[in-house]
Length: 404
Figure (tube, rainbow, N blue to C red):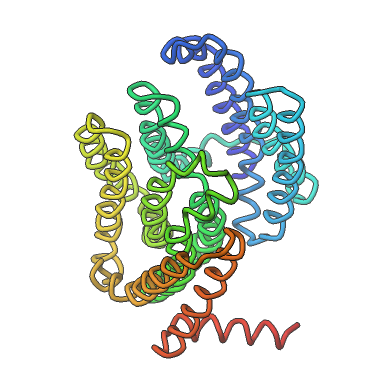
């Protein structure tokens, strides 16, 4: 199975790369910038490299060898960061970004191949592949729809509005997305294989889904609310004051991404029970709704498009949870009751640290006080309210400390 998927996946990636290679001049023409052609062709090599890495990642997830992910990811990130910054410093311009992304994928892949024992064998079974494709093609189509939809806003902003508008929009997206992507990917990689092992026990899957939603939103909410309410000093300190116009976008994205773990838990539960057909149906419904909202708001400015993303995310939560009302007897209202306490506490914490920002101090000292105060308020509030998620995490920490 692994070998058959590896060869098929690699060939598909080569075809996709060929498509991007030929499409590059037309994409460059769309943006009226012919210099994009070689950039797109080189950057698209990440498709082929990811095709080599994909089965290694699947093997690691299936066998829960998550330390392999850690070392490959940290290795690729550190190497590419030094390379990208170095090339930018000596004047390579956009090619520094290309090298950064390409080297990140290459090093990540190389470390996985060195540390993971699996290797493709000289065997291929079309029959076995068809069985896997019967489940997997729906996830592939869902992923393509999701990727196309997520990048559509950038395409529209880049075409209808100024490069400055797009820069502020993307910069506002960057900080919360870095946090949520790393944490959510970690949850996702563990949750699906764990749930799959219990796919015949629906009560067990419900318990895992509930635990994932309650714990992950409890952790994510203070991070996103803290970032949202402290956005101005953070942007001013890290990016300088010229990037302050990205703050409203950053706050919108923080609220949007705060609920991503709810999406992840619901969708993993559906996939774990082998219902990729439901997964695809949900994706189509969400994209029709999201596209309708986007096309209705794109004429009213970039900020309206950002708010449309937030509205689409809220509606997607409800859509994603709908099948689990039937499959697990775990509907959206019950889920809201589970994650609401942590989010409400995080909002209160955020308001408190926001007013602390009016203290007359340097930006860095003010930010330190806000972070420390926010953490203390959230922990103290959790203890006073005796939140179950707080007690659960506290128990995990105590257990870890005893073992170490």
